[in-house]
Image (cartoon, rainbow, N blue to C red; front, side):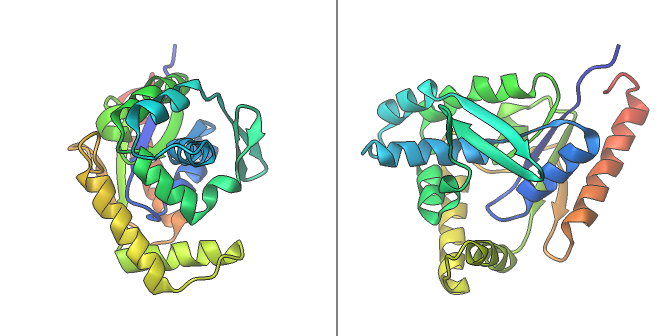
Length: 229
């Protein structure tokens, strides 16, 4: 009897981990769990509720009450929270900054931890900033995906421009560096590579090339553990 495969993909903002994780999940017919979308949803809901994104108890209580649902619409992952489609709303820079703010709060991380683990129990590809270190420390494969800040800023600027949000690369780079500092410097579950993670630099690599490397790693795991689904 086979057991489900779990893959953790961590990395800083705009390193390409979301794109890569979705492609890997499709290739392996596994569920994909976007933890970043969860934190963005919590941040957005906190802003809407007029809560301070530094108020741990209040935002933690809000996070614990949310009901998430991820569904695929073609290649697009739709994010529903309490029945509301937040797929587009959570992709703004405001939601991104709020996500980084609430992600440092221990009550918020605790509220989402069990939910994230439950979603991965049946096999999943999960990306975020603490998946291999905290959420799924026993994942079959851990990947740390990185890229230069300048390349990440260009990717993010292009993504924003495609949605009509035009800004300079310099301003996006400043936001990227600020989020890096906050994510890696937070007390609870900081951004870092797991000691046994496969490190991949995507600065000069296409997403499909990174996906192919990860699938090769999965083949090695399956060769050594035939029970892996």
